[in-house]
Length: 214
Image (cartoon, rainbow, N blue to C red; front, side, top):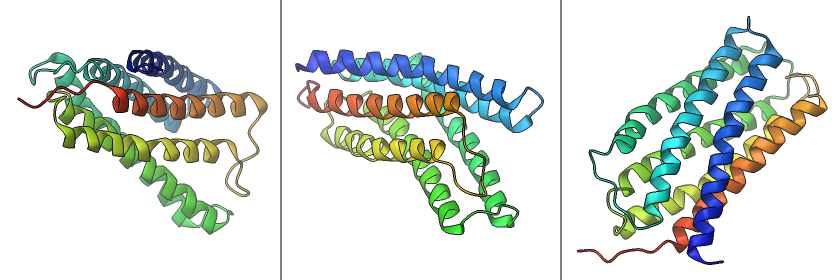
């Protein structure tokens, strides 16, 4: 495939992921019920993730065309301001889950709980690094070090997205009941789409034209 086709495929997957993330948030809230406060926080997380992804996708589209984004650009400034809030919310929800695991109230295998918490934390940190790497790289598409950093974090984020998807669809004894077929489909498809979008973004950056430093 040509660089242009990789770019088009990546952008198509990312825009689809935006819609899927919004749908996932709505589904999670509907399934848990509007009186569930934790579900509202999870829905807010999905909404923020979708908004951040909208801006990240726009920047990636420019970056993969070797088009520098000025520091004062509205999309860049918005992404720079919002993605730390998304990471903070994700970390807060992760901390709540970790406290529940540590409390001993859950009759689940501690090794499985440790693995889940580790995968979730790795996913959060990798996503934060992916956002931040593009924020730093976008103004300077000619910078090979910034490009290498972005590629490295995309390469880390893809397997962690897959691992998190597995965690979300495979039941753990003592942690939750077996998910129904609809939930398995919804969470599984979202995870696969996240992995595919990340891998396509990785390939789009790898094949993108790189201008020579001035």
